[in-house]
Length: 178
Image 1 (cartoon, rainbow, N blue to C red):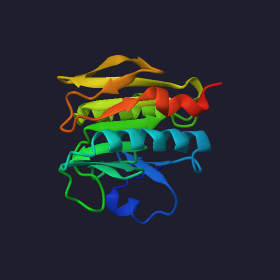
Image 2 (image 1 turned 60 degrees about the horizontal axis):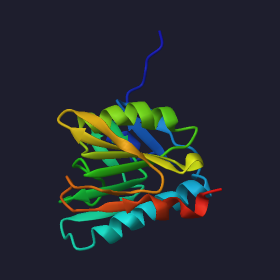
Image 3 (image 1 turned 60 degrees about the vertical axis):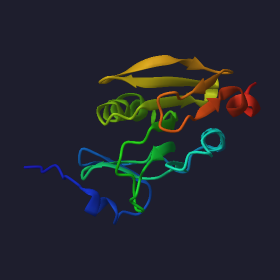
Image 4 (image 1 turned 30 degrees about the horizontal axis):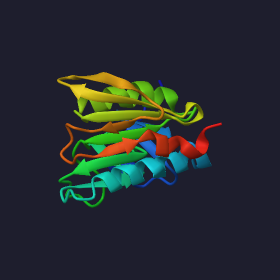
């Protein structure tokens, strides 16, 4: 008989390397993301930080653990979170989560994390496609996400966030257009 192992946060914090944990199942993260992936995540973090700098309740972070449940720990590329008091990991649903899509993470980001963030009431979820220089912005409307649109050169203002943040996608993708 084969037993399926089930893990929690207490196990997760002991592991070496980069992992996520979804419903007790460990998922290895790829080696360090491609340079374009990291650069785009940094540009988005800068856009969010600069546009929300007057907000004292919120901050922007990259590659931080979000403990959804004891058996589900995710590591979004970029978050804007408000009124968070825990120093070890995020405990509250961020206002904005950004995932930069890699071929190895596409299904996880587009399906599994999408469903988790929606259920946890993350107000905005952004999927960024570096090869296409495109971002898909989703806004929580009640219980489910509505797609706000595909953005390539436009700006988007997060009107329903505690801090009135924005992202100018022209600036984010400028160096990566072919």
